[in-house]
Image (cartoon, rainbow, N blue to C red):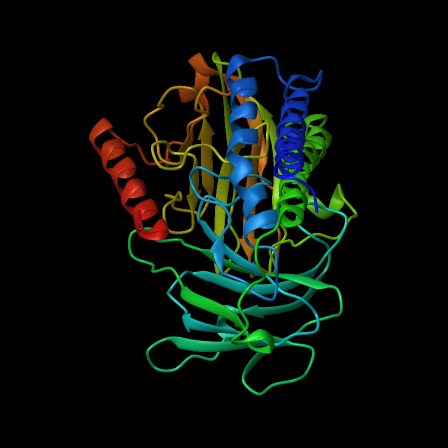
Length: 396
C-alpha cells in the first residue's frame, strides 16, 4: 500500500490530466472552419464549459446501470446536437441483462416517446433497439404508468433490451409551453434492489473524469464536423440521414430537415413551407455549434401551437437581426450563421421549406400580405409566455 503522499500525487495527476484534456478541447473552437465572429467563438467556449456538466453526469455521476437515476440532459444552460427548444430530454443508464422498472405520471406533452438504444459510434450511442410512443403507453385514469425494460417479456408496458443496450431516453416535446405538464418518473434496477453502491475509489474517479473530459471534446467535435457538411450547402434543407450513415438515437416518428443559414446584419432570410397534417411540428433555430439559441429571452423557435399561419395554411418564418414586426420572427441573437431545423412528427409527407434571402432594407417588399403583424406590446407578451413556459417545463 502506498503512502499518503503517493496517493496524493496520484490524485493530483488524475486532476491534472482532466484539466489538460479539457484545455486541449478548446483548440476545436479556433479551427479554420469556425466562423471568425467573436459571438460564435465565445459561444463555442461557453458550449465546452456548459458540457462539462453533461460529461460528468454521463461518465462519472450517473453511468452505472446498477444504480440508475432518471435525469434530464438538456436545459436552457446545457445544450448540443440540435436540442429541440420545445423538449425535455430525460434518461438513465441501463444494460441488457437486468430488469428496470420506471414508474410515474406521463404528463401531457404533445409528443412523447421512449427509446432504448445501444452503445455505438456517436457520442449519443448507436442504434435504437426499442421504442414506445405516447399513445402506446398504458396509463391509469390519473395518468400514472409503469414501464419495464428487460431482455425477458413482461405484460403491459415493456421494451425488450438487447445485450448492448446502454441507455433509455424519454423525449417530451411541448407545443403549448404554458399549459402542458412534464412527466414525473423514477427508475429502479430490480436486479440490484437493496444493494448499496460500492465505495467511491480513486480508480472510479480516474475513469470518470477521463471519460467526462473525453466526452466533452469528442461530442463537441462530432456535432461541429457534422454541421460543416450542411455549411457547404446553405439555404438547402437536408435530412440528417441523407448526410450521415452512422446509427444514432434519433427522434422516432419523424425526419428532421436541417439547413445552414448565413444572414449578415444587412440581410434577411424568409423560409416558407406549408406544414403537413401531423401530430406535432416545430421550427428551431441555433448557432454554428448545433446548439439552440437562448429560448428563454429570445424568439428562437416556433411550433404548431405558437406559429401564426396565413389563411391558406402557409408558414412564413423570418430571420432578421432586428424585429420586423411580423409573426414567426426568429432572432439570430448576434449570430450571423447557424442552422435551422423543421420537424414534422407523425406526418405522411415531409415537405422541404424554401428559402429566399433578401436585403434587409427590402424585406417588406417580399413579405406576404397575409402574414400577421406583431406590435411591440405583443412581442413583450410573447417573451413573457416563453419564460413562463420554460419555468414550468424545468420546474424553475
